[in-house]
View 1 (tube, rainbow, N blue to C red):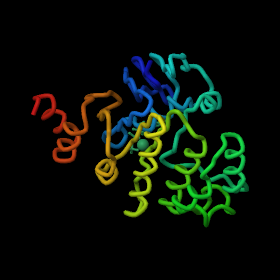
View 2 (cartoon, rainbow, N blue to C red):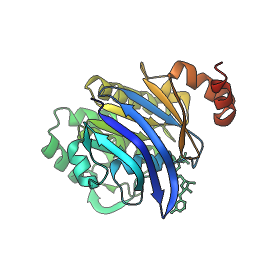
View 3 (cartoon, rainbow, N blue to C red):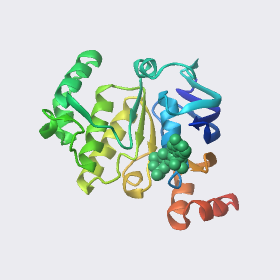
Length: 242
Ligand SMILES: Nc1ncnc2c1ncn2[C@@H]1O[C@H](COP(=O)(O)OP(=O)(O)OP(=O)(O)O)[C@@H](O)[C@H]1O
Ligand SMILES: [Mg+2]
C-alpha cells in the first residue's frame, strides 16, 4: 500500500482553482521531487496535503496509508506523521525555539536532538523567538530541524535549499538521506540541481505546470532536460521521447 496517494486532487485558494487533477503515489522510503515554474501550485499542493485551511480541496482525494484524510484537520495529519517544512515559515513572537523543540522531543522522543541541532547549525537560535529576525538560510535549517523532531512518516520539504549556503546544502542532503533510510517518504520541492545532485537516490520527478502534473519520470530523464531547456520547452522535449 502506498504511503501517500493523491487521486485527482484539485486545490482551491479563495475559490480559485490552483491545482487541478493531481494524482501521484509515493511509498515509504521514496524521495519524490516536485519542480515547476513559480506560481505553478507546488506550495499549494503541499499545503493541501498538510491540510492547511488556505488550501481547500475542491476535488479528488488524499489517502495516507490507505486512510482517506481529505477532510482530516491538519493537527490530526501531523499526529499521523505528516510534516511540512514551509517555504516561508511565519514568525511566532514569544515562542522560543528551545521550548518548541523540547516539547516535540518529549512527545516524539529524540535520541540525537543535540547532535541534530549542532549539525543543522540551529544551536545559536535556541533562545530566540521562532523565526523572528532569522535570516533566510536560518529559517530553512530551523524548519528542517523541527520536521526532523517530528520523526515523520511523510516529510514535505518546500525549497529547503533556497537561499542556503553551500555547506548547509550538503547537510540538508544528508538529512534527506537519513529520512529516506529510516523509511520516511520525502516530497522535495526545489528549483535547483544543487540539492538533487547530492542525493544518492530520487525515485520520481513530477513537473507541475499551471497546476497540473504535466510529466512524471525518473530523475535521469527529467532533470537534465529541465535544467537545460526549462519547463515548457523541456516538456516538449520529454514528450517527444528524447
Ligand atoms: N488568495 C489567492 N488568490 C489568488 N491567487 C492565489 C492566492 N493564493 C495563491 N495564489 C496563486 O496561486 C498560485 C500558486 O502559488 P504557489 O505558492 O502554490 O506556487 P509555487 O509553485 O509554490 O511557486 P514558487 O515556485 O514561486 O514557490 C500563484 O499564482 C499564486 O499567486
Ligand atoms: Mg512555493
